[in-house]
Amino acid sequence: MARRYDQSTTTFSPEGRLHQVEYAIEAINNAGTCVGLLCTDGIVLTAERRVVSKLLAPSKTSEKTYTIDDHVVALVAGLTADANILINQSRLGSQRHMYKYQEPMPVEQVVKSVCNYKQAYTQYGGLRPFGTAFLFAGWDAVHGFQLYQTDPSGNYSGWKATVIGQNNQAGKSILKTDYKTENKVEDNLKVAVKILLKTMDSSTPSPERIELSTIRRNEDTQQIEHYTLSDAEVGALIEDIQAEIEKEQKKEQASTGDI
Amino acid sequence: MDSVFGLVGDGFAIIAADASAARSILVFKHDEDKIMELDSHKLLVSAGTPADCATFNEYIQRNLKLYELNNDVSLGTHGAAHFIRGELATALRKGPYQANLLLAGHDAQTGVALYQMDYMAALSKVNFGAHGYAAAFILSVFDRDWVKGMNVEQSLDVVRKCIHELKTRFLISQPVFIL
Image (cartoon, rainbow over the protein chains, first blue to last red):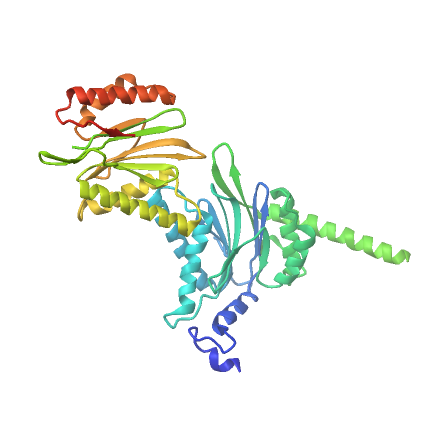
């Protein structure tokens, strides 16, 4: 039934749906997981880096995390090629604002400008939508630390914590139990890694497959600092989480054993 | 021929402009309010060709309102000043606006600020400023009498001195000033 109305982006189905946009959103659900967590003193961002072949040269730059401006960072889930165009657009938008007003573009406005660009591809031109979802994270003087999620339709929403990409439902259920709004960056680093370990389909997680970074604001210099954790630091966190998980499993086994 | 000046005090700014609208040897009115409220915390006043001043002021006012409506937050004084300068700069090599401006604004985070701009899109953040022929007289008064952190009474005293200076020494009679 949907077949007749899903060939063109610019056609509504009789039920009032845009199938091309929905299919684009589906494409994201197979992409590497991205997690964003708002903390009282910053933001924690992490993503799974898919390695499809051992022959691939190790990436010198980030595959999932991109700097949009000094105060805004984005995580990508979906088609990388599509993402590159949108990353460039958001960077352009941010610099144009800086040129015009000589002050950083508020984070929500950066997100809005990219989303408006995405929306155009769902309404006219006859071109397919972008198959990318983003997590935009940043700081501005208007609202402080913020986290936004965008999808191919051009919709965006603000979150305290969210997961996109593969197994995001499993990730979100962990958020419900483990994420606390009062957490600081230190605490949420563990929560983020824990979520990735659960959503990654690998039983042997390694630091090369995880991109983990934090956004903080230095009160003295008033600069936003985007820090990417080294492999060693990520490795240490993985070990900590795995040890905790083992302890919990042993506790469960012990308690059921008693009964 | 407009006389326009302003100064920064302790947590406030005063802008003054003469209220005469005139052409050649004829004065049309003595109650022309040249100071435009851009929003609840910003004032813009311009001196120069009357049509350019009025059009440009309205253009800026409407664009700042549009920004506020689109983005749910109003632009701060710094952002507004640079936006205005950008507009003057873009127009400069097409059809310049012959307007010299003073922008005064207050933000919760950065306090009060006064910016002086001229028709060639030069921009400076200043403690006091003046445009027009009057500037020759007024800036001397400010140089001598302005101090940082004056209260309202002290600032108004300095303003009265400026107006007195103009009435005594400026060729053109400008009996009424609006603050």
